Image 1 (cartoon, helix red, strand yellow):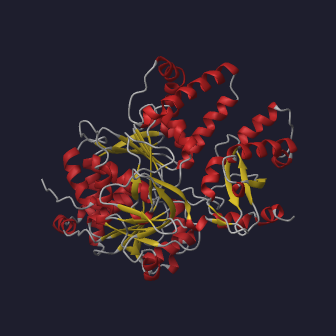
Image 2 (cartoon, one colour; image 1 turned 180 degrees about the vertical axis):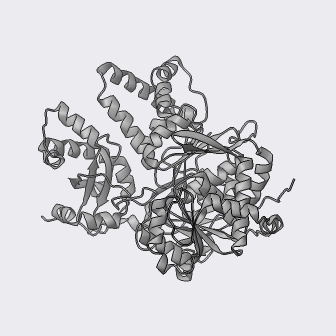
Image 3 (spheres, rainbow, N blue to C red; image 1 turned 30 degrees about the vertical axis):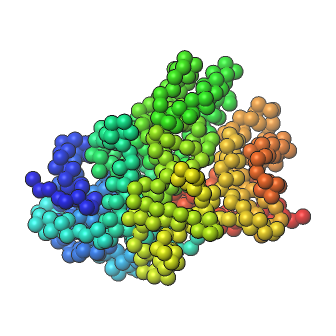
Length: 604
């Protein structure tokens, strides 16, 4: 049995595949049912795919793109590419032809894996402008006859028929920590994305140093193991899912179930009942809003029971945050009547840890879930830091913070409050962009995060905003919109919000209502309407939202009060252009799209 010195993800995969052999590596849906693929089967496929790539002359350092939604074949492609010392280039599954073209061209990719016929069609539209891409390998069934397109099973057969195990072995052993592993293109809220160069050391050190913190304080045993079940739904093109979901599960020997689609995530939760999830705040927001919305329309007795349970959750929050078992008959009653049933209904009854990142999680959302016993470990990181820099430990969770740093990592604040980061997880630079790389680092070698933060006496980091999002009012006041927005979104009637006010005399807001809640409230008030726009203009609705906004911003300074607002008639989504693939708001897009509405608020 071949054993590899573990200094890279491919080496760890090879060793664990030999160790876990018949155990399930992953589960994927076929005709509505989950089917397992073993570590042994995965190893054979990864190696055969690597043999194929070698036969095509893919050299160390060559770029190979992956344009696909989350699925086990995505893991297979990335492992095969990096095992031969090549560099994988993820493309978000929802990217357009032009967006995919930019990444493929800028990265100098030579082969492109695609998941679906839709993604294949997108790249074939621009293939004439991609002379370096010699072949497209599709995961799904393909009945077309386009030149240079191959179905993955055929590719695996060809690789199996021309094995080169010695060459593959040499490639794996030849991986050096400083060699590139991936180019992850930032989703970019403005301008073209930049290719973040992450090395094998970046990924490997980030997983090792994070898992080192996930140990039982009393026994020292690992808190994650081969008995865990991950649910993969955050895009693998996103560095958080790549490191924590893909590499983290691989290191532990855990099984990964792939969600059918982000749109079916709530159903997949119930089917899979995962023990670990990697998530962004938008998902938590929607789950909490849905629960509170149902309660609002429930009977009086159910409302009273739910409110009683929430009061017990708030009382026991410090206990849960310190990894202690809640005690007392009232909490056990609340758990029996509400928490256990709610978690079972959500498919979270086996959930041990939920990792949250990508954007700030509101304190209200964190306390809601943690109070009922769900451990949400909020952390902070960026694509450029592989991504994990800090996170809340299971035995010391502090809602409103993103925890202390992981091992071998140093953070500090610049004079202007910008968070600076140094550690083995920090990127090698931006691909073919020396100027941007130079600008990203301070004179003493710290990465400039672009975020404003505060670090308390115990080393816990709190993110207060992004530099590029800072609003400078006409009066010269600097305001971070994120804290305001998170507070306002605590209303069950508000789905999304964007604060406006740069170079303006006062703050205003674009507000996307939580339409099911608003319509239910309107019905209870006897408000009738034929079109949603009519409802949004009703004075009683305007008064409701004025009250909701004022109540949630009362503790903010006078200059931070939201003087005016506009109710927007449609939810912001990635498909309609207002959100990035990681669910961040594209402020520039929103400012342009709602220009007339914004100007009307300042017309006086």
